[in-house]
Image 1 (cartoon, rainbow, N blue to C red):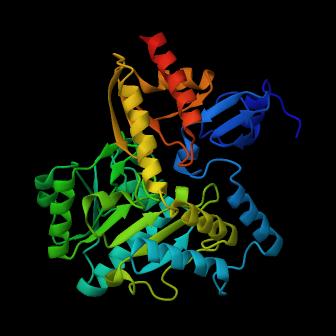
Image 2: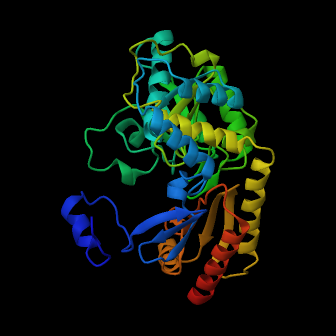
Image 3: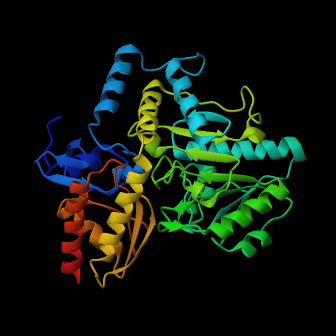
Length: 397
């Protein structure tokens, strides 16, 4: 299609449901941790597609593996065994030290599956009436209906009535609020080690330890949503590893596919036999291209020094921003390459100015910038991005 920047908005509105607001440039290709538009302008990407493009753009190992699979086969359905699915299943189980995995297509689908597992376990063991799921205020767990209701932000609960029932919300890092909301109907709690959409907030270790202890005593399933903060994003395979706990169920997606849609649910032995044949299914889950991509990602992040490199880059970015000594920056937060920058002005102002200067960033609420660069980003690209950010802060100040 022959399209130019002047007509893109009108063309877009002609054909698409208006659920997103895009800037008026057209992305053409990617290289390293940068996008290039059709006019040749470069944009350093501190978003990686909401944490998806974990290996950046034009990664040779990923391209080669995907091209080889395209030449062989694209899809089989889950009616048949195949090598790529087995390979990824073996790698993720051995790496995670959990017991079984189920592959699907997205993070929200993974969370829906996790809720089904928790509720069926509870129904099988205790009968009906024990299906309430507790989540934290300011959490985000997806946009399908149960995941939407697990999301602890009222703004996402409008319009789509009647809404699914069986959800409670408690204050993060407040163990008394959690205790006060436990009753005979509760079957599970879902947590993000780092609340991304909610402001890049790292949960407190003492809170998590006490919460998990209570759940073990009461046979309440502990679900960790690692869709955004998992797969090396925080400098470990999973964010919950910082808390020295063992969850019952873990959901994954985003960075595992490095750009190919994927989701997954990992369970421990206790929950590994809850779902039987016919209890859950997916047409595209375990798709061969997604599995090949996931295999490359798991190989890359398992290389010696990879996690340390993610941590060092994250520390470098945070310390550099703190050393700007800008009155606009309140504080930095996060873990690894999941970084939040709290600001005294609205974050979307900085986001827009950054985009115009060739830096793509995200927001996480009214006054928090969110950085999710590719895990393979170079220091050269980081320094270029920091210079842009420094100039903007000086300009705004």
